[in-house]
Amino acid sequence: MRYAIAALIGAGLLSAQDTPHLNLHESEQIALRNNPGISAARFLAEASKEVPKQLQANFQPSVFGSVTSVGASDGSRIAAGGLNNPVLYSRFASGVGVGQMITDFGRTRNLVQSATSRAKAQEENSNTTRAQILLDVDRNYFAILRSEAVLKVAEQTVTERQLVADQAALLSRNGLKSTLDVSFANVNLASAKLLVADAQNQVKASTAEFANALGYPGQNQFVLADEPVPGPPPDTVTQLVAEAIHNRPELAGLRYEEEAAAKFVKAERDLWMPSIGLVANLGLVPSGVSAFQSRYGAVGMNINLPLFNGGLFTARRAEAELRHRGVQEDVKDRQNKIVRDVQVAYLNAMNEYERMGLTLKLLEQAQLALSLAQSRYDLGLSSIIELSQAQLNLTSAQIANTNARYDYQSQWSALQYQIGALR
Image (cartoon, rainbow, N blue to C red; front, side, top):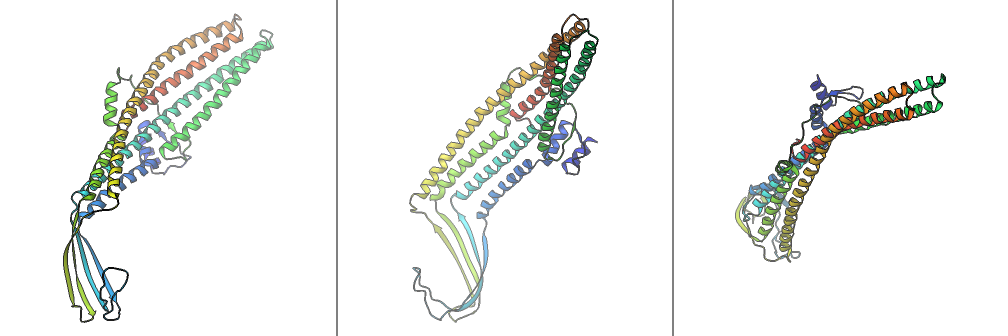
């Protein structure tokens, strides 16, 4: 049932009034189908694959047809505008021209290889976008669960503090407690209601972010399943760093960019090499002066050898070499940042995992303290201040314990992203 709902959302067939029930995997699949960022990255990757094909076309023959009709004074010549001085004749002719590059001594081949590497880099950029969107989905998924859990804590706190406020008011009316107790109880109740309002707003904000990550911004309500808490992070970060350097798509993309830049340097160096091409023309002259035969045909070879261009080719090669060196440094810089990011994500995940155990113990102690404070207050052995502090401590412990669980799950997803495992 859940997969059917997920498919409908991905296809845009559910309205904003429907409330989909999703787990984390289903949410990720919806985002991969529906988020426009994924589609944009995919289209750019597909477009980049067409560039090598454009360059490879230079290896194929080019064929073009021509139809020419000229009316001229017989025997007239072009006398200005060029070094040649051709004779002009009235005629009507049609023909076909064929051009074929024989060799440019490796320049086109290097350009094709450079474009191929850039296409691979763009594909890795698409994978990076995919991973970022999945991370965004995971974070907002757990943000909704966290904010909903905090809302439940806040609503439960309102209920419990309402009972205390009612109890204090009753005791005050019977002369057993002062109006100060009633005031403290009402202040605590108002504070709990503010907590509910803040939690409700956080639920709505997290839902909006989650819907945007899914590519379905019109949806304003979800029912999300709890996910099992992952086990502890590994004891050391060394293996995680190695996985990240091997798996991170943006680093792979930069390596392909470096390959592309190296091939482009060779292509710019080959600008100084000659290019050799074959040209052929043939056709018919159905109408014209007697100087034209009814058929014509010619085959020739053309060799272009660059001799001087004001330092243009030298500057282009120097630019390509400098850009290549820049990309090499970008690869090193990105690798260093990935190592840093993995270490930080590992420490954050480890810290949140430890906090889960600590906040659980804190919650147990806060529950015990409240039970004792409530008993002392009921027996008249303590003031409302002691009970209020115990209530506040319990609420803080409940929220801390809730946050620790979902923050760890969110940090675990962030760690998976940093090592390149979130795909």
